[in-house]
Length: 284
Image (cartoon, rainbow, N blue to C red; front, side, top):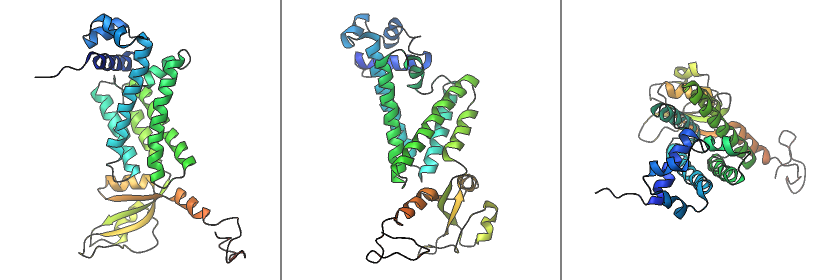
């Protein structure tokens, strides 16, 4: 026998779907009660603050649920670059399957209330900040410094939310596809490891314009595939994967370069305080 949800949870679930599809202002208490199949009096029993309280709690609950998608989509990916691309691709699939009705559960309300309702504005800000924090955490784990991780997270979320608006308006996922490409930035250079078959040479990868400084290496003791370490644009990584190549993104080359630069300090600590070699600078 199916166990029915408690009344409070049914009200929040119904409100979340209605707010997401038709907005906060366009949703009435009677609609929420009907969708939740709840007695009218139960609204003010569970939510003494009325519609505003329902709105704030719905934003936080749905925001936390959608935040879990970052864990379930990005974390299983082979690397952060693939995870972000999968995130945008999954959003596009969901939008098409819902006939362009279900996009971001928070943005629809945020656009309405940001200048008119401080309680709801604060709730939407809280959710967006939690999502930014989740993206930042993964970027930091990938070796990107805190300031850059914050900027990149803002770019990813802005691309996603803006694309949702365009997709719903045009009834096309073209904007999400373009935003996904921009989010992984085809012009960013990454240090990568590309898998090759035992019979291949670097010439077989010539069409992909990889920048490598040595021959394929790191073949395991059992004689498996070769792995070539190289530098490649984000667009090249995408092209390699589309061609069926297994590619591991090891680091953002720019972020990695910044970490190396921090090892060259303005503080004169090389060899007991003497200046280091001219080509190196002053080392920590």
